[in-house]
Amino acid sequence: MSRPVISILNSSTFGKHFAEHIDTLERFADIQHVTVPADIDGDSLAVHLKNSDGIIASVTPKIPRRTLEQCDKLVLLVRHGIGCDNVDLEAATELGIMVSRVKGIVEKEAVAEYAVSLLLAGARKVVVGSQAVRSSNWSARAGMIGMELKGKTIGIIGLGNIGSRSAEILSKGFGADVVASDPYISKERFAAFGAREVPLDELISTSQAILFHCPLTDETKRMLGQAQFASMQKGAVLVNTCRGELVDEDALYAALQEGPLGAYATDVVEGEPIDGNHRLAKLENAVITPHLGGYSWESLHGMGQTCVDDSVAVFQQNGLPGEIANPEVLQKEHRTWQPR
Image (cartoon, rainbow, N blue to C red):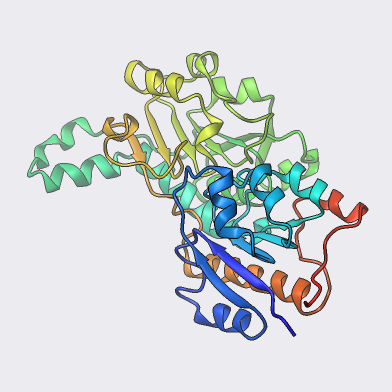
């Protein structure tokens, strides 16, 4: 009896730190590791994946319709993370391919804590100060006056699993006045997490700091542009642990150079990975880290276990994965694993 082929695509962490995840998969499946450029085209990507029954996919590359159409054995694509914006979900649904993802609660603590650490780094000049010492310029501290969080209005865009935890930390831990905007959250949940509901434009114009905690969708893509940056408080800090495409980079760059934006602290960049030659990386008031939000031991274990559990459910138990990103696929005759 044949075994399913599961491809691990561009993940530098799955199975690396928790060998038991690979061990479990290898009991019933053949594993292939696929590493490709982040900007690979759909046809070239299909060459690497066309024999896959399952895929465990990182945040890159994009997996477009053209790739999925050529993967005629593919039953399950598991995102090793929360966001599925690099997968053509519409095409996957049409082709009967289930796409699953990590539940937000798995990365909740890691990403919320990291978002707050980025906020502090931007508000208190942590990175610039560290670089000054390394450059033997201790006296530069006189120009590194930061902003305290207590009593400040801090806006959160998106009050789901992670955004709600950030709201709790900032309101109950730092004593900040947290405002939030999320059309999909009930009014009761705002108060439960220590946040006041306000319209998005009011959040942008009144907050001394703003945190992104929303997915990248057609609705949220480039949601902060020239007009929004122009309305911000002078010296405001913007934190992004979601996706670089949430902001218009040209407008962001101008706002960092000319004001009013005081600092941009981000874990994500459009077109990542980037290097030190990127224009944002050359700005002193931009703090950029290499997509580390979910990189805690606890979160990585949970992410990996989700990928394993979903694969076991589909390929061993003839069941369904835990969190389906394209639930519409269940309303049609979706693909199932059949030993060949």
